[in-house]
Each structure stands twice: as C-alpha cells, then as structure tokens.
Length: 322
Image (tube, rainbow, N blue to C red; front, top):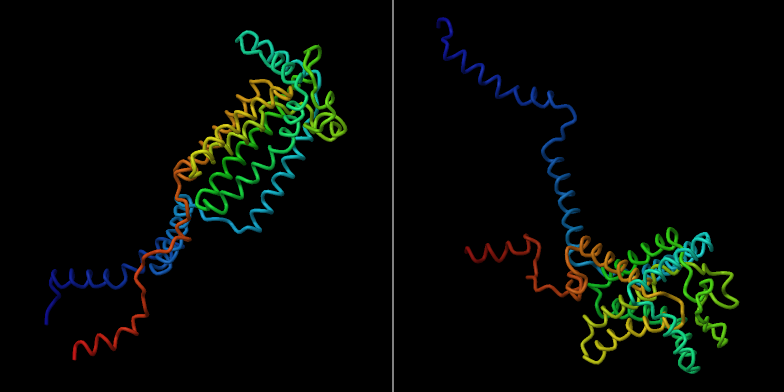
C-alpha cells in the first residue's frame, strides 16, 4: 500500500525499543541482580540494621551461662595481663616521687598522716585491710548479679562501662608503673598488712611474688567502687540504700589511703577511666546507662492484636457479604 510513512517508521522504532531496549540495558550493567533478588537483599540488610538499632536502643539480657563464662574469662585475662606487666622498680619509684611531689605542691599530700593515724588503731586498720582484700570483688559481683536480675535492660550497657574502665586501666598499668606509697623508698609509710599480719593486699606478704606490685595507677578499687555506687544510687528504690551506694566509694577512698596502697592521684586516674567507660557506653547505646529501659523491649509484654492467617478470615468475610 505504498512506502511506509515517517510516522510508521517512528512507531516501529518505538516498538523495537520497548521490546528489546530493556534487555540491552540489562546487558550494559553486568552482575546486576533481578529486581526480586535486589529487594530481598535490601530487605535482609534493612532487617539487620533494624535489629542492631533495636539492640542499641534496648539491649537484650544475655543468657546466664554466656555471661558467667564471659565474666570469668575476662577476669582471668585481666589478672594475667595485669601481673604480666614488667615490674620496672626504678621507673615505678621515679613515678611515685613525681606523684608525691605534685601532691605536696598542690597541698593535698596527706596520705602519710592518714596512714600513721589510722595505723595507731589496731582493730580499725585490721578491718580496713580485710575491706581492701574482699569488698572490691564481693560488692562488684553482687551489683552485677543485681543488675542482671532486676535491671536486665541496663545490664549490658553497665557491664560495658565496667569492661572499658578495666581495659583502660590495663594500659595505665603497662605504660605508667607506679610504686604504691607503702613501697616508696624512704617514703615513711607503714605497710599495714605486714605490720598487723593480715592479708589485705595481694602485693604484700606471701602473695607478693604472684602479683604485680607496681600496678597502682589508676586505682581500680576506686573505679569499680564508684561504678557500684552510682548504679546503686541511681537505680535503688530505698533512700538509705542509695545513701549507702554513695558512701561505698568514699569509704573505699579512705581505705586505700589509710592502708598506703594508693595515692589520691591514683583515685583520680580511676575516676577518669570510669568517665571514659560511661562515655563509650553512651556512644554505643545512644543513651546514658541508667536511662535505658529497665526491661528489654523483647521481654516486655507487647499490647499487640492477635493476628491469624488470612485464609482463616475468608469465610467470615464471605458470610458477611451474603
């Protein structure tokens, strides 16, 4: 019926493009997944991100066997690393001299006076020796158990604070060996454990050969006791318990100075490590530890409607239409 017009040729080109253009485009991008597979991959990625985000907003309580193993192994590693640090006595004595001179310059070098005053009261210093040896572990473990049972939504974040604090302390033990006051050369301090025959320190008496005597900066007695005290103060219900929580790190500070196991500045170092621990947990979980939900979202009964398979509702829909 004659030559094809220009309009007909344009229609043919458009039809060819519609039928073959898609495959050409697909060939031009090698390795591209089909739309269905792409959506599936994106869905899995989104689900993973959502799960991680939910875990950070409301950390789930770990299984008890996993937590016991984690804490046990972590403390074992901590003990090995702490005691494996080279005992550099000359450098440790030099650092102790620096700390003592700094405190004298600041007018806060009262450790020796406190040490001698408390040592004159036999029953008091003996009690402090045992306090130093035992409560450091007993109360920390007790608070961990309490958080796990009563505040599961805050437990993981609080434990993270403790782990980060302790990890930083290990770095301090390695790079800044420090002789405690009782081991200072010509420091004039009294080693209360030796004098009174108690076992208030792993670094005094028979246990001295298995413990690093110069792991004094920062003080983990202060770091851990303040961690316990803050948890009790912010989360306990009874006022007197909260007051005891604040008194615990204060009492620990008096004990470490009276027994000549630490300088004041060691306590400052412990507090700084704890502060970094709290900031790290704040960054990880997008919220301060004690403001996280008390119970994880997955353990909270949700007021959600009960759903049933779609086919179960079809008869009801059909009968309603009839």
